[in-house]
Length: 496
Image (cartoon, rainbow, N blue to C red; front, side):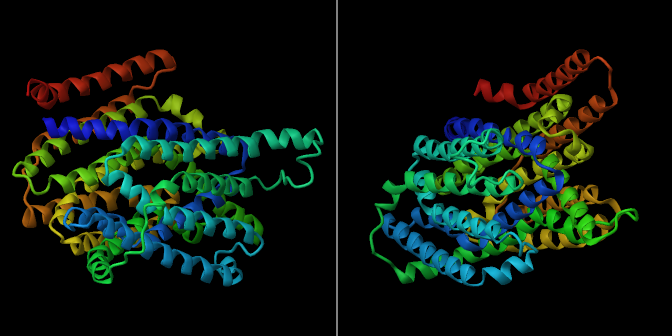
C-alpha cells in the first residue's frame, strides 16, 4: 500500500500540472477545428505523426537505458554525460543532413510548395530530441515539481502563441495593424501552428539549461556500447509501436477510397487530407486516457526500476495494475457518458467522425495496460522481447490498414488500432508470465473491462432528447461502476 501511495503521489505531482496543461492544450483542438478547414488540419495531423515516429529514431531508446544504468552504475554522472553527448551528436548530424537535403525530403512528403513546414518540423524534432535526457535526469532524481513546471511552461507557451497567431493576428491584420500586416499570412494558419510549437520548444529547452550545465566531458565508450545493446531493442520496439500509433493517418492518405464524384488531383488531395483531419480531430477526443497514461508513465518507469530489487516488487506491480485499470475504465466511461458535451470540442465539420471515439478509447485503454505489463522485459533486461511484440503489432497494423482502410475509411483505421493494441497486450501478458510471472488479478481486471464496455453500450442505447436527463442517467451508470470497483478492490486497499 505504501508503494501505491508513493506512486500515486509521484503520478499526481507529474500528472496534475501536466494534465491541467495538456487539458488546456486540448482546447487547441476547437481552436484549430473551428478556424481551419479539415484538409488543412490533415496537414497538421500528418506531420505530427511523422514527428512522433522520428522521435523514436532520434532518441533510440537512450531515455530508458539512462534509467536502467543509473540504477547499476556507481558513477551516475557518467551515465548522464555519455547519454546526453551521444544524443546531441546524433541529433546534430540528423539536422545537418536533413537541411542539406530539404528539397528532396519536401518532395517525397508532397510538401514541395511548403518547405517552411518541413524546416520547422525538423527544428521542433531536434529540440524535442535533445531534451529527452535532461527530462530523464529530473525524473530519476524525483524532481517531479521542476519536471512538471517545465512541461507546463512548454504547453502554456504553445497555447499562448497559438492564440496570438490564430485569433489575435487575423483581427489585427484585418484592421491593417502596421506591426502585423507586413509579415502575417492569414491564409496559411497551419504555418503558425508549427511556429508556435517551435517557439514553445525553444523556451522549454532554455528552462532546462541548469540540467545541461551539469554535463561534463566524461564520455565512456564502453558504457555507451552497453547502453546501446540495451536501448536498440527498445528503439526497434518503439519504432514498431509508433507504426501502431501513427500509421493510420499515413494509411488514410494513401489507401482511402475516393468517391466517384470527386475528380481532379487537387480535389482528390483535399479529400484525402480532409479524411486525415476528421480522423485526427476525433482521435483527440480519446486523448484524456492518453493524458493519464502519460502522467502514469512519467512516475512509473523510474519507480518500477527502483523497486525491481525488492522482494515485494511483483506484489506491488500487481496491485498497481488493478488500480490502473480501474482508473482507465472510469475515464473511458466518463468520456463516452458525456460525449454530447465533449463533441463540441471539435468543429461541426469534424463531428461526422465521432463514431471512432469509443473504439479508439478502448484501444488506448489496452495500450495503457500494455505499458504497465511491459515492465517485465525492462527489469529483466530482455528488451528484445519488447521489440518482437511491437514488430508483431506493426505487422498487424500494416496488414489490417491495407485491407480495412480502402473498405471502411477511417473506421477501418480505428478498428485496426483496437485489434492491434488488444493483440500486443495479450501477447505481452502471455510472454511475461513465462519469463517474469506476476500474479495479476486477471479475474477482477476482466470484470472491470467487460463491465465498463457493457455499461457503455447501455448508455449508448439510452438516448434521450433531454440532455440533462440523459447525462444524469449516465452519471448514475458511472457511479455503479465505481460501486463495483469499490466492493472488489478499492475497499480492501483502503482497509490496508
